[in-house]
Image (cartoon, rainbow, N blue to C red; front, top):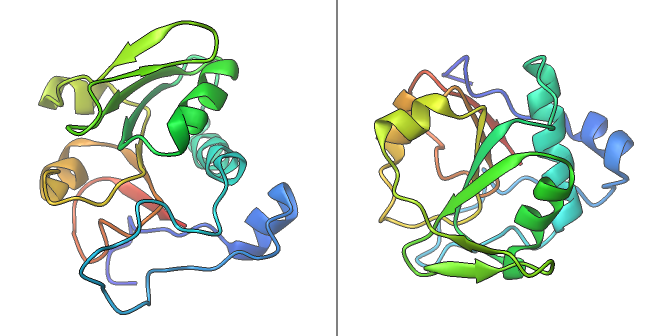
Length: 163
């Protein structure tokens, strides 16, 4: 890879740790006019496991980690799972102002600022949309788990883990 910070997860390692035998990378697919919101073979469990592995590689536990999710999919199941693991989760999605969690709590979409991006332990990309400033995200965050190869070809300081 051109960018040393773009370090994809090893599919064999991921498959071993999360029984993801149908792992497939979408980074080499031809770009489409309507990219998927979430790669079809990735379940919420798979995404959460990838976040846990990426954080662990940074010597961080999921518990108490500050995670921003860009894009709400699967009715917030990924967010719910991360919260159950003790992560401090917020999300940003211009199309979803708030989500109601199963425990009765409500989360509201937060504004993305440079201060927020600097404070994160991990940014999770669940939606590929032109409303997001990908270059800013690559420059201002330390760790990104990218489910959709949204940062493919974009250079920045972030270590990017692609699924």
